[in-house]
Image (cartoon, rainbow, N blue to C red; front, side):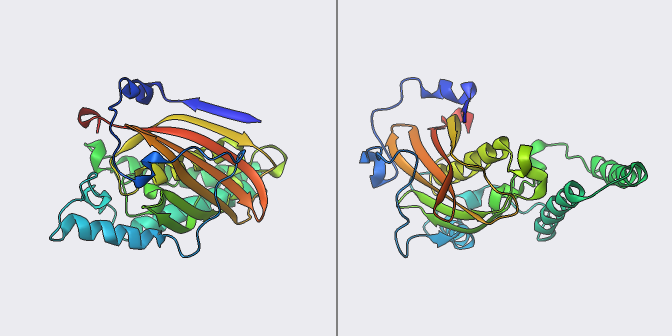
Length: 267
């Protein structure tokens, strides 16, 4: 089974990319011939997501200022919601999974809907006047930018110089598709997030232009899996990134993607 997504809005930015490359020494890398897998993770490579954020904050606010390859993630707003926002995201995911796992009669559905509507009314009363003041997906200090839509990522390792990332992920019950397996759309969502993390980490901002997913095996629910991604090559403003989702040694899905660096007026 194959899933392909094109982002036409981002793809238009590809027109006449500059011939020079910037960023990694990896700009000269050639696409590996591995038929849907990624290279083994080098022993000792990478730093944790939290350490990466701390490093970026030090670069942004220390004596050295910003790195030459682009603005630090720490320069983006990420303080809205404080420390309790992380707990809110966790509770939202747990509530969704709990409902997905419940055996409900009509009365119980009515009671849950009433309670959810109360929360919705309260949340709507807090609507931000400016979209850049919202918390959802604007917390760059949190995994998944603080979006509860994404499955939770754990044990993240980022190797910025090598253009790699690795993380553990567990699809909760609310991500179920047919046959008690993870929904294919949820797998594509995961890849878009982690491939984008690899393409963006420590570099200028890019957007998804192309995403192609191959589904190799049934992806189990409520099971810790490993997702690994790497930049294969850089061509001007284009960054080609691949990834693989595995359960132990079994390849469940793999992805190829193209991310395009934004022009200043698109950032």
